[in-house]
Image 1 (cartoon, protein in one colour):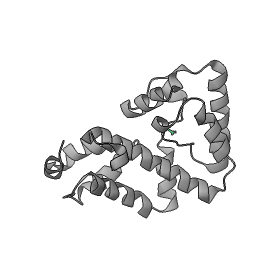
Image 2 (spheres, helix red, strand yellow):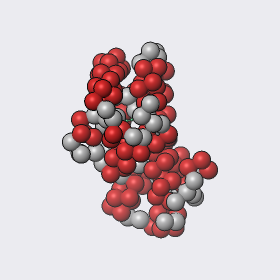
Image 3 (spheres, protein in one colour):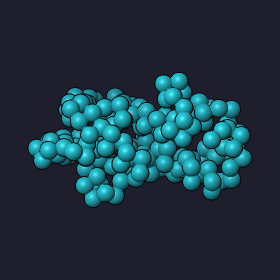
Length: 173
Ligand SMILES: NC(=O)NC1=NC(=O)NC1=O
């Protein structure tokens, strides 16, 4: 896909393609569409991230709440989005032992109780051993700092998903 094609997409096509760049938040793609034309992938990404940064805290927390837990109920019930399924499987979260699943479920519950949104991490950049470690570490962070960290992970996930769509190297975005 190239930027000429992207810039020529009507609203429906654009949201079909980019609606899940940010997990279950097609509103963001719907808003970013009106800011076309985009000069390149970096420019497109910048508009997605600027929308997130401009939201009030309630909106930013809402984005986090649209994310399924890592190794949570949706993974067990196979109701994840295709992107999320791939990401979680890629981090080895589909082959956890019962003890690992229980540990993650408990940590996720503690995290959600403390911050009011789920623990979000770019699973493709992590692995089954690192996820609980990172969750336990971030559990101790101050809420304002943790909100920023979590949104940073949302952006990493979005960058990787955009790179997939353009066959680009995410490190060069
Ligand atoms: N709670 C999460 O971090 N969820 C996810 N991270 C990913 O990379 N994909 C997800 O679904």
